[in-house]
Each structure stands twice: as C-alpha cells, then as structure tokens.
Length: 338
Image 1 (cartoon, rainbow, N blue to C red):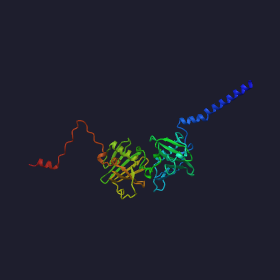
Image 2: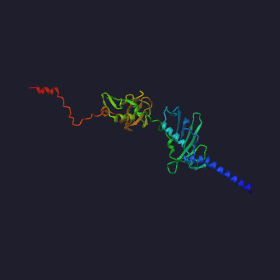
Image 3: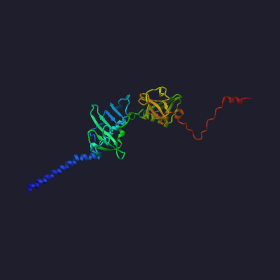
Image 4: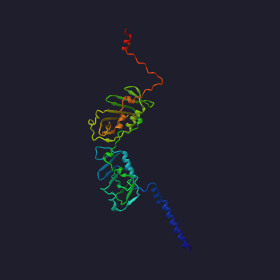
C-alpha cells in the first residue's frame, strides 16, 4: 500500500515538474513574445542584410538594390531611392507578427488577394541571393485600417493592423529620393545670393551674428538669414524634371544662385531656374547632382531676397531729431544774388 502511494506521489511530482518547466520555459517565453506584440512572422529577419527588394503588383514592378549604404532603383537612369522609405519598409517587415489569423483555408487565399497576380508580392533577399522574406499583401480589411497578409509557403492568412500596402506599393517616382540638400544649418559660415541685379554676400561673425559684407557692410536680419539657411540645409523636392536639359529649364543661366560655405570649407550651391507656371513650381539643381528637381513657390520665396529684405533696420534713438538737410550749391548762389 505504501509502495503504491509512493508511486502515485512520485507521478504527481513529475507532472508538477512538467508544468513548472512549461510555464517557466517555452510557455513563459511565448507569453513574453505575445506581450511584446506576438510571435514574429519572420523571426530571423535582419534588415541590415537586405540588399534587394522586389515589389510586384497588378500594375507595376519595381526593384530596389543596395550597394554599400546607398539604395538605387533598378532599370532607371541611376535614380537613388529615398533611404527613409527603404528603412520604413524594412522595419514594417521586421514588425510583422503571426497573430489575428483570418483563415487557414488555401481555397480562400485568392478571395483575400494574397496570391501572385492578385495582391502585392514582395521578396527581400541578401547579397548571396538568400531569401530573407517573401510575402503577399492582399486587400483591405473590413475596417479599412487593416490589410490581409500571407507569408509565402504558409496557408495562414493574417489580418494586420495598418495599411501596410502603402509602405511597398509605390511607383518609381514615389520611391525616388527627393533630397536636394541635407546638412546642419549651424555649419553655414557664409552665404552668397546672386541674381541678375545684385550679388549679396553674408558672413557669420565670431559671435554667431550675420553681417552683410557686400555690396554694403551692414548688420543682417537674423530671422531672414536663418530662414535661408534652414530651407537650404533641408531642402526637399516636390517633383522631378523629365530630363537633364539645363538650357530648357534656364539653369545654364539661373535666375538665382545660392552658395553656402560650411565650417569645414565645403561648398553647397543651389541653382534656381525658370518657373513651371502651370504648377507654380520652380526648377532647381544641386550643382553636384545630375537630377533637376521642382520646388514649391513657398520654398522659392525663402531664397528670393533683395539687399533691402536682408538689411537690419537702423534703430532710431527716442527724441532724436532728423539730421538737417544740406543746402544745395544752387540754393546758396540764389541767396547770395543781389
């Protein structure tokens, strides 16, 4: 009897050990993953290893490739891709979770548009052509704030939050990098604005104040100069010109040329050409880039300044009388006449 009791107690003890192992081990890890947002759909995905992204929809195909740190758009004239858009797309894949399973029925995959030829097919691979991620983005969910998703090789159709299709289903123009300049405005030490009428040179003094040094020597308006520097340093295009013809866009003889000298002696030069009157935009070019961009009128207005716009107004002392007018020589002769 005692032996039987001992066996039963031993069996209960083993069962308890198994439960402790499961809850403290695998089940506990799973719970932690679920608390952090679920189990990753691509658990081994490493965005830093990605060197190629191919996006295929019912209307277009776009292929993006990376060399070093820079991404470009394949089958174009060397168009560069926006690094932020690439990073956002890769982060989207990294954050995919295997949750909210809408269906496991292979017969419903076409209904959810998560098959080739229906939805958007995305493949991401590394430099060795190893597949890092392969999935389909289908139609919008019932609440319009979600979308159906399926991993290639899986029968599970997931309903994911957010309209993730927008992160991938872009035209070549939408993927293109619209950055004209990107540097810190605090590094600018000299600015030159050249038009057909005048050339204005501004320099930052040792106290960080801006001074006009040519064609006059006078203090500059801090806000006006800061606007020019901030706009130039982070200038992004609205659109692109259809070709690289400088003469056609009047960039061979620009209406305005802005030159910034940085504290490391680097030079940044912006050329502003003619206006695209239909869109109220202006053709511009970073002198060191091949691409011709289009910027908005509000951006153009930041650069379109005269000497009078940039001069600091002279402060009048309270009670000070205006200086007497100098008598003209002709007036003196008339006063002295008999």
